[in-house]
Image (cartoon, helix red, strand yellow):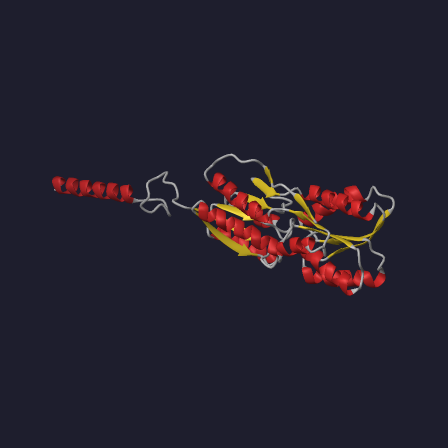
Length: 309
């Protein structure tokens, strides 16, 4: 009887050891500890794909992802802050390795960035910054300097005197705030120059046209227009032409294909050239470094250039 009990105990011990040796943490599968992922997955939360600038930025990101064997997952906010937050939450659920965020609204996006922080997913902001949350790096042109460049050129063209219209981007976006800041740093010093209208047109061509039409109904004595992006500048240009005005200096920002063509044709005066394809490319390359545990710069600037005829 003692032998029988002893044998039974040994069998139970062996069974418990077998169960203990085969138990794994959830999600580890058959991979050995410390195995690295074969492919990095990067999420791109982009503000819109109805603006040519961000279409080009996305294309630059896609090209860099392909070159670096990175899986790129893009969510389009369609310029809706709530939709962007939802998109970022989706990327978090997919457990991407790094999230690139091009904010629609720099303040509204903070809660989503904090969610990514909580999930231990690094965040990189692209073109537009965020007002909070932990961001490992920011890839963008210097929008403040771009605003200064536009102002200096505009003043040169109008001889430092006359009435100016400023068309602003989406309220709450860092690009609109920073471009306006740089512009006013220069313009506000000139006593013979007056900004007679300063209104948002949300970076949109159709809105740029309608806002400019409304402004011209009350004041046609306009020497120049500075628009925070090319889409608004091209819309304003249509309104100016429809009103029969000539020799109005129109300066945009982004150097989209349509704007560069308008400058070459002499319809638009100038545009401040960012390089959206390069911004997208550098953001993805930076994400790869972050995913691999490499240290990166807090700010990665992309050069600007003034395009004029």
